Image (cartoon, rainbow, N blue to C red; front, side, top):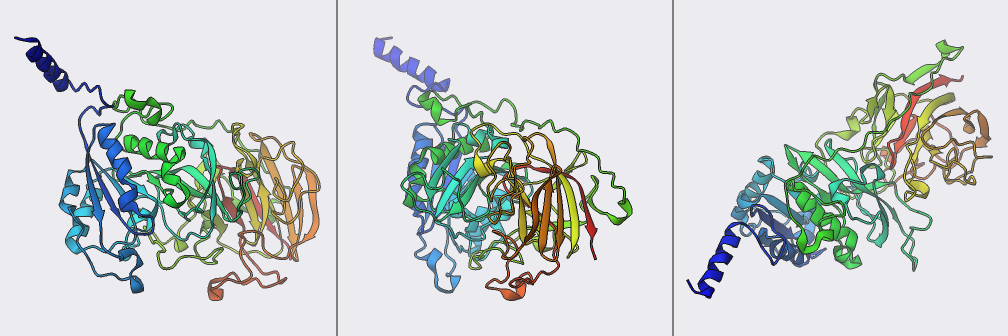
Length: 528
């Protein structure tokens, strides 16, 4: 055998062993199918570099499908004629499907071939406008990707990794916080099985520095912009970022999120600093163990033994949520504009839904991304008291990202909950009448300790005590707080009946902003 023949034989053996010197290699070549379509975000063109990298650098077999239906996502009357999806039959080969499309309307056969992937319990990764992928099927994203599209109304974004899932494989190597253009989609309420791994606020301030990062100023509630969803045995990560207009697709945070999500969805091990950090040396191996968030060690709440117990109604006594129901800002009474052109629906009717928070060890636990809760009954004049616990966070979590929640009186005026220990009181700190009035003094305890809030609300005036210290004295409440029930909306028939300075009855509302704040011993006493 000559040297050339020996060399070729050696290469053949190496090839059979799966060794590859040119790029990283998946253990067994798997197929990833991209399905793209839509003019607004140019998904057909913009996803090609991602497909090429997965094929060239990681050894996947990639099938790229671009739906060229002209003007489908801008069709008049939102009703384009059905068109076939090119190469739709090849979706059946997919081990993973990557979907980035907007407002499609396919023929029955193409739709069936596409949906079979999901019904068979196969993994998929959704990008941005996939939350409103179809004109007519408004249930697709909530059912198969675990989140909604309700509207998109701010011009900027401040995003942060969820500290309670900071080690999730999707966010390994992702910078902890960033600012960017293109405000967040309203993705709430999440579907059961979804875990938010990146949150964001939307705002409309244009600054030279990274917008909004310095003071976390914002003009929207907190929304998940990336989450891990489990459905029908499959992993379905969703990333609602991805606008080429602001450089999302080239940004480190998006690149890390994308490639991490691909490997996590396929149940490969994601390195500590993310897939991209390994470069061409990345070795794709089956996941060693399923990610589980670290369990918080929360002390038991204090006891509540009022002397006039017969006059107090327990709204939460540690057992159940029968006196509460679900509320989010996209159902009546509306707190913001809802894009009815694309407003997603299902998988359940949230307007009738029970409260979606958890009861754990006698504590009521907020679920960010899953909506607020409100009492089923309305109240006018009353005393309200409750205990609450703010989780401890690492130093990189700052300002209004630290344990943010709130208590809304009559659903309209928020008493803020926030980790503000040792800081100068502001109109956004712990115990503040949010964005209206700072506490008289800082009576906060450190995060990781139970705190007690007592509120007297009579004829539209609030007196508040925090941890036994009076921080507000008979403050007249006028205009509803930011995202409180409004005095009027563009749909007044669906608004909360509170006009100008007239105080009406309303529910108690607890907010799920960006932290798993815990509550206990919630009691109310009516005042005639």
